[in-house]
Image 1 (cartoon, rainbow, N blue to C red):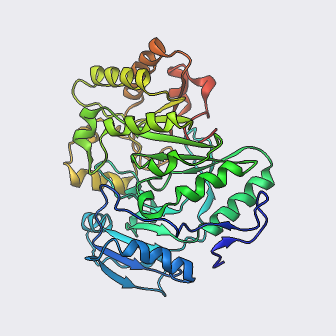
Image 2 (cartoon, rainbow, N blue to C red; image 1 turned 30 degrees about the horizontal axis):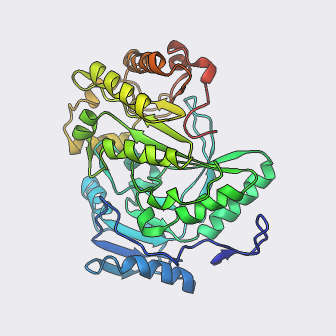
Length: 391
């Protein structure tokens, strides 16, 4: 649409700015950019140009290329090998527009309650060896880190959907990206959180491994934004998460967010059965629920598509700790993702659930991308569908 602000009368506002240009972008931790592409739509208005140029100024050594006739998902990164392409993409930033940024998920073959999600960003700069995003269609062929500048279009579509439904409706950020990893660059949280705070129906849920909460702490959120973190024991993070904030720093960020009144949740996924995992996960679970005022804990094992699994095994080795526990099933079974055996999943979930119930029996518990049998065997069948991405 080319708008720099919403031109309709939202919540009594005559105009809603949707590109934060009156702020100072700063370098995010763990984000290393060597090449920047300015794709179709990225410079289509003066405010978009200013926004993009402010960020580019932070990377004077980067190779900046204008490709204004090329869509964001058609940028050629110059690599043919899948792993080389993946690694190059982690160091490449693309600005562009995403016309279908607000979507309703369509999961089949598991109990995921489909939900609305949106994408002001694409992909993730962090270096988790088990990265599931690497296997999704949008990332597989275009694995660059992306910032989409048509935030106005997204908020207008969220407003339209929520007003049509006329009930509290969550819009999730974190399905196809990390929700806060790039916030120091964009300042998008300063637009998104106040937008949802004022909306009568739309609610905001995000998922991150980032600790970039400084901008959020001073915002009026009205309890309409729920912050959730992906966490794992330090022993697991050390083995499988490269260039990611430490779990200690994540727990600290969670406490800071909770102190500012944000509802806070945790997602423990993928649970990985490293040697001694029983004691490791029991100890970490106790630490999490005793020290962080989370309102909901969602558990999940590895859920990985074939392409992402291939990259994972090239990053580590074919017989790595994750792959050796993956069950052999037909590739077209269920939702097409590879998982551990049901017996192992039940054992892992049950241990963590029992640990939680000894400390905080009232804590909401759920499973992610699971099958009905696992909800039943873990005693969570009454919570079916009440997981991290929904209210």
